[in-house]
Length: 548
Image 1 (cartoon, rainbow, N blue to C red):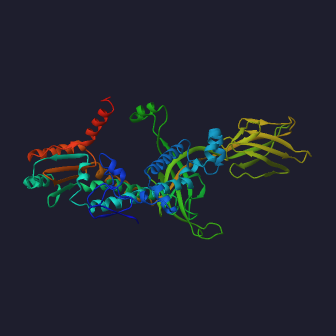
Image 2 (spheres, one colour):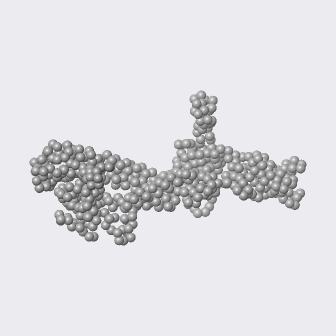
Image 3 (cartoon, one colour):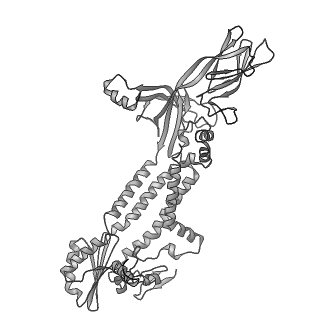
């Protein structure tokens, strides 16, 4: 490391702008400034001193505040785009996700899915952005904190005259010995809670240094918060899944790796009584029926074979529970919340085969809409399900298609083989339609009945990252208060020739600081401090032709 020597005898590392001993400007830039940049006490920072190796370039890149701001902007834009359409966790799991986005939202939905925004908060590149922001905060903090800490900890009382005259607040009093007013000044400073240090005919008064660490405390809080956000990508620490479960259905609970199963015994919806005068006004304002509560009565099972690669689940009942809004079922490290519901979903349909000529009913078949069979036998008759469209619609080419695997609008193509005819007959059935493509069928299939059930939407959650988020938020607020409500103030006073020089620096509220110093200076007949930034602005205006 190249060391820079100052006339005071203090050696400084490469990149230092102000001598760490006397404060004298060392760099050419600091010498040319009218007032010194005291942001980091002129200390050398690694990002400004090293530029050769790959590590140096990476360090310098992430230490830049601009880079950190751009990462935040990209994260905000990505997070905003992620709210345009629903995330995949809120879409039924038994449908084609890509097809759903295209059918519901068109070309933009397809593009949204192809770019991975449907699963934004679990995507690898979103995690990479969070990691980049965390690295940027760590490197930027380390790059600035330690040089600043060393400079403030080791600062000397006696500062170079040039250092003092280039401060923003400066006062020079001629024909006065500092020793005559020293005790009075010290008394006033101590009354105002300053820590006073003297060195011969020089004095340093300081208070509120801890406020300088506020931004770095903010960074620690943000890093902790971001760490909690990144830990949410681990299924061991965070699960937020959605499941639809139908009455009578037993299903594996997402996120439990097959260890726990849930059986829905019954979904119950309760409405407010429209005849109850207590709720009539509220019901009228809502424009119809108002849900009082909805719940899912469930039975929780544990699979004894969950750790085996093969074999049917061996379910052992744990408990029964009524899941209501804000009353989740809690087990192990998980919680099941009631979030949504769907009433009267088609479950199965009964069809009867009829001889159209004689109106004779030959028999009936039942089609499970979620797991239909391909062939059905009625005496000597065979009915084959040639095609099935759970959510029927005609696509842009006029071809029958399905929007999803949910039977919201089921349609069927049946083929009937009878012992009386060598050729089979084809029929197309949908809700409200029974189509004979050849218009010559002897046997027709008619709807005989429908079975329906209710569907409950549950959210599965496990969250061990919440303590990180809470602690990070608390630390951030502490740093915010620390840096916002206190100020770091320093006053240097020294004897110079036949006069006294006062210089002062603070990180904010310069006007109040100047007024405080002037109040003390007036009591001992010292000159008032002046704000040199205002003087410099006036000189610039005079130089270029007066005020604007």
